[in-house]
Image (cartoon, rainbow, N blue to C red; front, side, top):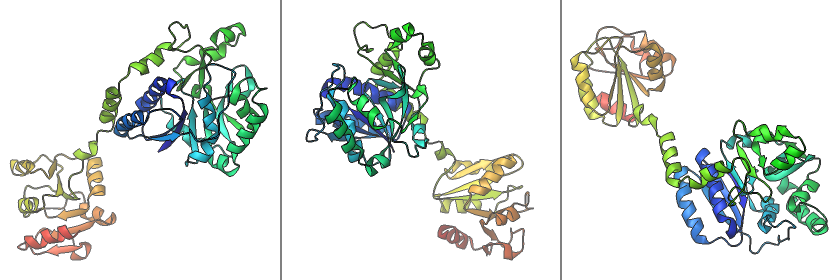
Length: 394
């Protein structure tokens, strides 16, 4: 599971919903941690019920008893944002992705966890106006290092000392703490929307052009938010798309995406392979009936006669007429037992190939195509029950 940490209060719960939906529409196997102090338990019961359907989960991290309360100078910055100071103390995973809740995710974020942070405390994206500072709304956190160096205590100590003198609340504090020890990430992982007018005035067009193609993480910074009644910021429609997206839509997508095609390739508890050039396969129908939980894969370099085709009425029989060499090799690789029980000749040296792959090989004495030494068991043709028992024991 990939650890994603959010921090919010009850007033921002609808924004949390949109963010979580956007993540789950594009990712699975996410373990959310929501840091808060006033979100109802019923919401967690509900969100857990839908998240489990997309292979995700959520941890209710109530912060009411945590000593991490500071007042920001900006009205649109919630006190809950300071809760992230305690990620090192509260989250067990060694690598964590922190996201502000004024964000939507439009693509795969799981590959972020493949980034080697080395000795860096975080990975983050540069602020447009401050080349040497990062925006703290998206942080890939080296949580193992945070734990080792007790970063939570350091951040709270810096906040108590400088909170009334810094310009940008906890983001300023985080930049102070990690000044020379953070890894710069590509802007697509935190494309900041809201500075557009100022960037235009400052002629920083390269920051504006980064919406094509659509960034993986869209961050609506400043007080200009897409949910406001009137705002001319870019990508407003993306936020509203995920607002309107239903959990039924998201669950349906992953239900199709995760549909188990293996069910059409594998059946039962073992796979038996037979490669034949004749319709005469010793005791085949008796074996099929007696071993309903074994999958019989019968292949031939030619088309099958009606006698063999009739075996397809059994659920555990799969026929491969006019077989390609690639399919033959796959079936031989996948099988648990090769059954050398067809009359006439051996096809494509299949018994030898099965031996080379260290497969179990059974045969009847009248159908074997090689010396006894190559087989794990050679059974008299009249003793079909012995063959059945031998297969069961594998």
